[in-house]
Length: 62
Image (cartoon, rainbow, N blue to C red; front, side):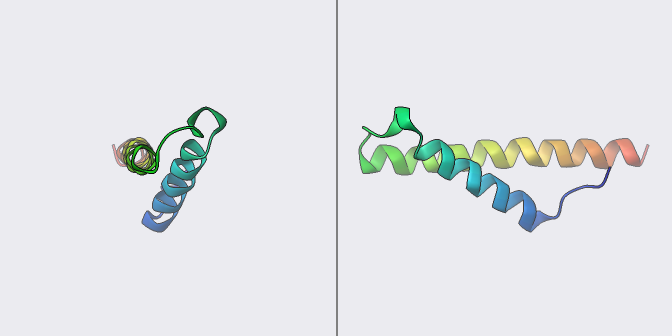
């Protein structure tokens, strides 16, 4: 298993954040709430993918 490149991690995180922001249950939110949700979704997905990446790196190099 290979680690993902940084652009791939950022792109996937951004895609997840967009999907979460425009999901059906978040349609009635204001623009400010959607912007905050986009940022939180991006950071959460980024953190999760970086954690997986470092886990793969650690597993390969032990």
